Length: 369
Ligand SMILES: [Zn+2]
Ligand SMILES: [Zn+2]
Image (tube, rainbow, N blue to C red; front, side, top):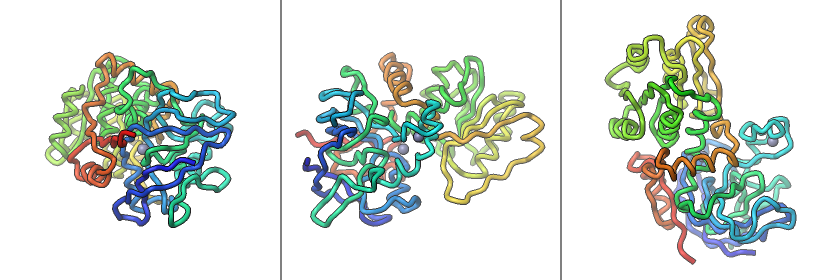
């Protein structure tokens, strides 16, 4: 049993509350991590606001970075003292997991959003009773977290650990979409719709891939300036210029790849209409349950265009995250420029700054022991 300081979501739309809780010792296949820092992802905010059926009270957080403090008897992947990040969880035995596609795990939803162990137990409790744990197989808004072999990723000890949490979800989602799903090649063209941390990560990855045109679309001019500084070759503010027209004017036939990070139906349609024949549009942004997208059927069919849903980049965290760390060390993937650090105690400020666009990617620093 470990005493932890955790940010607990007790009511929808309400600030998280810092509380002292008890965390179970790791079971045989669990890993106890002392969290050093954790990113805040848009999904944490969506869950806090009740848009997904995660039970409360719960400890959210799913971009944890830290140091392994204890491992269960069956854990072989990491050892005490290893530096790790914690990514999304998966079951390891469904057809997707067996095919090395863990982000499409058939149990993705229960393993990540139901915030309990598969047997229904929770590892956290406070004075008022049970608190749901195991959100994304971690619940990293706490000074310690329990994770699993499926979602722990060992990182080099000379990498800047406090910075690495966002690689576990937001940055992985944007960069992985470019590298692992769209497989953007040198000389190809891409348009990225939405310049939050996911979209900007996609822009940086497209530059690494050697894309010829990297077109960033957003209604926030400051974000467009940022996109240009990390590799966008053209930026479009659709409040001033229809994005599809500008993309067709720049590229002639349209782009080879488009990526929607907004989840807005009209933006997805615009992204698809910006595609060249045989181009692919990836959908990353999640709309609410039951949302529909309308496409021009003849345009879509006659060009052999594709539209594909993407979760967590479609990536394998054990492969992509070390690759991103190497690219960052080489100065080719400057994701640290998106990060603003906050003390853990200021978690609610960090969340509201992220919602209002004051910061791009908040990272919470845990108190020193
Ligand atoms: Zn699975
Ligand atoms: Zn996330």
